[in-house]
Each structure stands twice: as structure tokens, then as C-alpha cells.
Image (tube, rainbow, N blue to C red; front, side, top):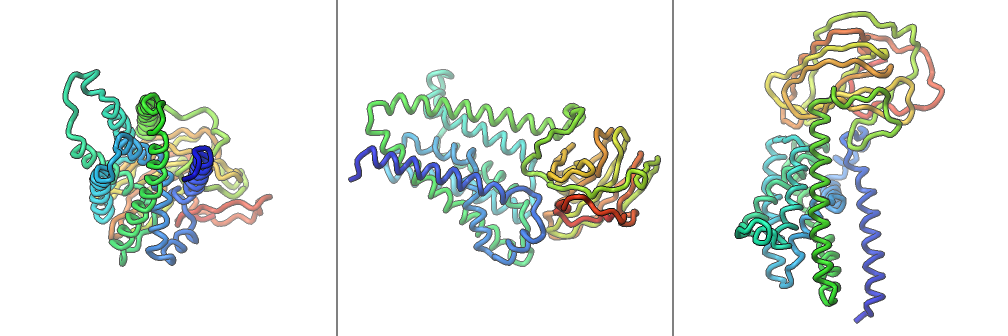
Length: 396
């Protein structure tokens, strides 16, 4: 048997490796993937979805924190298998069912509930129901299964941002779920070794209290962050800053515009009704150009199908990939108004996770220029600039 010091060193290096691996894997999960990346996932077949599932679980700190809380006081192999199986069955059911049927919930709210599930499991571990509420704790096996169902909706939300094949949809979902389980097993093995080593020490009781109270604080912090994100996207007018941040945001559309002549983009009041078709299991982007201080009123609706959408803007001439998201949600319609804080393109990204094409009727009114009616200007940018990464119907 290895000495504790050598074993500890190996565990530390393993944990660092998993952390680096997890951070790198985040690159696969922005919903803004290039067409080449989407095609590589499709060409890679089910192994690609399995790999993405594994990397997502290893980078999903909220899911991992929940699993860590489950096994904290479990010492027998039978109990570990029983409770982890309950969690696995729970999230597998909703992952497969929701994705196969194109069911989408607001991911901020789902992640907020997942954050609360971390608080719940840690609160149960410190016997909080008896100590602080003077009641008997709910059946743990039942609660873990139920909370697993909620985690499955969170996993499904991420999976539905990927290019799913209509012909092999079920196999894609199952492959992703197998990857989730492989990632969970890998993380679980490391957690069990760490806890087993610490359990033999006198400081384990102190460590358990610190760890579980930390999980409660972590869950509460994640909950507040997710609710802030929900409020930000539900009521964007309360959060629009006077100037755009220099830092790009994650998990959003990374797009930029070409440098164009300001004279050629002179704005005028106009009103339009525009028809847009979003293909089955596909996405579409539509852009308008607005100068700083211009106003835009808009409304769009489908014939009933719900789409994920992101209403956003990119400053003209930006080469960093920065964009500002004004509203992001899932629905069959949306409306609002915007007063711009920078020159640039402003518009919508729609993601259709249903098996049929969806028709959108977009009505706009304000001071803007329609880019789909503008011919490409013969002006070369000074630097090579990234192109919009989604299928788009805007042209220059």
C-alpha cells in the first residue's frame, strides 16, 4: 500500500487534471458552434455525443457537488450503488424523454433548482431537519430520485443546444447519456478515494461539517446567480449598461460585423413585416443595423411551436467576438423595445429543436437598416474578423 503522502500527491495531481479537463471541455458547450464544428459532431456519430456527455458531467460542478453530497456518509458498496442508481435513473428518464420530445424549460430556473438540490443534500447530511426544523427528514432514496429528475432537465437543456440528427435522434440521446454516466463514474471514483482516505483520520468529523456547510453556501450562491440570470433575461431593460463590457460572455452567440461605411448605413424610420423559416433541428439568425441611440420596437411569433431565442447585439468593427445579450429564453413569441447603446448589428438567434420547420412572423418598427436588403459594400476590414457562427439570413 502506498504511503499516505504519496497517495495524497497522486490524488492532488489527479484532481488538478480533472479540473483542467473540465475547464477545457466548457468550450464544447456554447450554443454558438461553427457549422464545421456541428458537422464534425454529426460525422463523429454516437462516439462524439458520448464524449460530449462525459465532458459535460466532468465540468458540471453543480451535478458533481450533488453526487459528492450523496456519497459523503455512505461507506458500504451496496448503499453507494443504491443511491447513485436512484440518481442515475432519475436524470436518465427526464434527459431522454425531454430531449426526444423537444421539451425545453428555462435553463436559469432549472439550474436554480439544481443549486437548491445541492443545499438540500448537504442540509440533510448535517441532520438539519432534526436539529433546526425538529422534523423527520424525508425519505432520502425518494428525494434523490426526484431531484435526479430535475437534474435530467438541466442535462437535456444542454444536449438540445447540440446538432441532433433527426434519423438517429434516440441513439444520439442514449450515447450522450452513456457519456454522462461514464463521466459520473470517473468523478465518483475520485471522490470515494478522497473520502475513504480522510475517513480514517480524526479530523474527518470536522472536515465533514466544513464540507457540507460549504456545499450549502455554494448552492445558495449558485441559486442567487441563476435567479439573477433569469431576471436579467426576463427584464433586460433593468440591466442594460451605458457602455458595453470589454469582456465577452460565455454560452452565448459569438458574432461580429464587418467594418462598413457610416454614410452607407444612414438610418431612417421604417416599419417591416418579415417572414423567417427556421429548419427542423436547426437554427437561424436575423440582423438589423442600428446606430447608437436609435430605437427599435419589435414583436415576433410562431404558429405555436416554441423556440430557444437570444436577442442580442454586436458593436460595429469589433474583432474580439464580443456581443451583448438583451433577452434570452424559450417561447413561441416575444415583443419589446430597445434603445441602442452602440453602433452595430442587433437581432435574433433562434434554435428549433422540433422535428418540423417553424415559421416566424417578425414585425419591426424604428430607426434601422435591414441587412438582408443591403448589398455587400466594397470595403475590406483592416483585420480578419470572425464571421457569424450560425446559419444566417442577413447579408452585407
